[in-house]
Image (cartoon, rainbow, N blue to C red; front, top):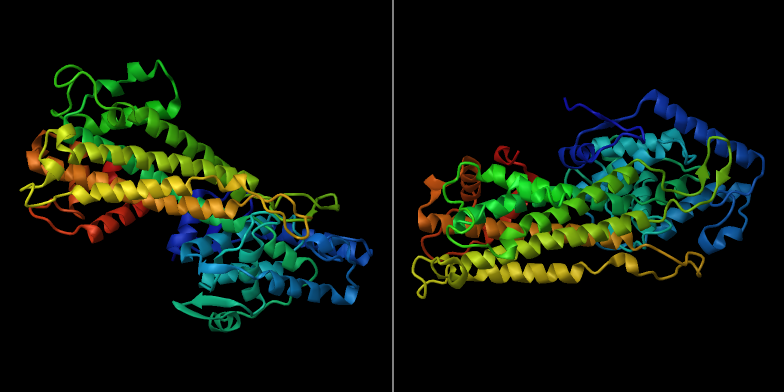
Length: 501
C-alpha cells in the first residue's frame, strides 16, 4: 500500500510532487483542511444571499465583468465558462504533467481562499487517486488570468464532459468517470472560475522541468569529471583554497564535488606537469556550472512557493471580504523558468565544448574522433554534430517568453506573462541538455577505453564509467548509437545513481 501524501496548501515539496506525478502516490486531505474549504464556501454563500456584486459569481468574466448575472443563471454561468474557455490546441500535456497539474490545483484550492465546495474538490481528489487524467492541450495559455484554457479542459471532465485517459485509453470525460466509479459534479456559484483561474499548467510543467534539471546538473558535473580523467586534466583549478577567494556558494560546491569524484585518480595532474592550464570548458567549469546551479537554486525556491500559493481570483479572505487581485498572473513563474532556460543552456553549451575536446585530435592528442581505425571509420565524429545542433536549438528556445505580452479580453487583460510557454520551453531544453550531457559521457567513456586507463581512475569515476557503459558500451567499429544515447539521456532525467551521492 502506497503511503499517501497529505495536501494542505502549505507543505507540498518538489519531491512530493514527483511521487504523485510519476509514482502514482495517492493524496489525502485532513479534516482540518476540509473545514477551511467549507468555511470559505460559507462566506461565498453569504455574499450571494446578501445580493452583493462579486466578480465571476454574479458578473461575467474579463471585459464582461460589468455585466450582471441573474441569480437563476449563476450555475449556468460556471458551466458556460468551462465550455467557452476549453479552447486549447496542440499536443496533450504528458501524463506526469497532468497528474502534477491536478495535484497542484487541488493543493491551491484546499487552502480555503477560493470559495469552492468540498464536494467538487473531493471529485478532483478522486480523479487523481483513481487515475482519471483529463486530456489537456499544451498550447493556448497566456499565463495570466491563470492558465485558463488548460485548466478549463481539466475542469470539463469534472462535469462529465471533455476527454480523459483512464487505464491507458482515451475516452469521453463522463465515460472515464463512470469507469472509475465516480459521478460528475454539478457546479455552484464561483466554482468554474475557481477551477480554471490559476497558474497550475505552467507550474506543473515547470516544476517537473526543475526536478529534471537538477539531475541534468549533477550528471553535467559527473561528465566533467569523466572528461578530466580522459584528458589527464589539472586538478589544481578545483582546490578549495582557490575557490575561497571568490566565495560564490555553488561554484565552491561544484569544485568540491568534482574533487570528490576524482579522489584517488592517478590520471589527474598538477599544474605544469603536462600543461600549465586547461581550456576554459574544464578550468572554468566550477564557475559556469556553479552559476547554473545558482539559478536552479533560485528557481526551485520560487516554484515551491508557487506550489503552495493561492493563484485564483477573486480571493475569499478570512475577514469575509471577496477581493479581486492579480494572483493568477504568471510573471513570477515566467521569469523563473526563463532564468532556468539560461542555466540549462549553459550546462549544454560547455558540455558540447568538452565533447569537441575529446573527439578533436588536435585538442585531445587521442585518435581522431575516438575511432579505432580513423579514416576507414568516422568514430564519434557525428555525436559532436548532434550536440552542436541541440545546443543551437537551446539558444533559440532560450529567448525569454516573459518579454512578450499581447493584450486579451478587449484589452481588459492588457499585460500577460507567457509563463506557460516558458515552462514548456524549459522542459524541452532540459531534455536537449540531457542528450548533450549523455554524448559527453559516452565520448569520455570511449576516450578512456582507447587508452586502457580504467585502472588509473578514481573509485567514483570508475563507478560512473561502469554506469555509462551499462547503457553505451565502448565501440570497436562504426555503429549507430542513437538508441543508446537516447536511453542514456532518459536515465539522466529520471535517476540518481548511488555513485553520484
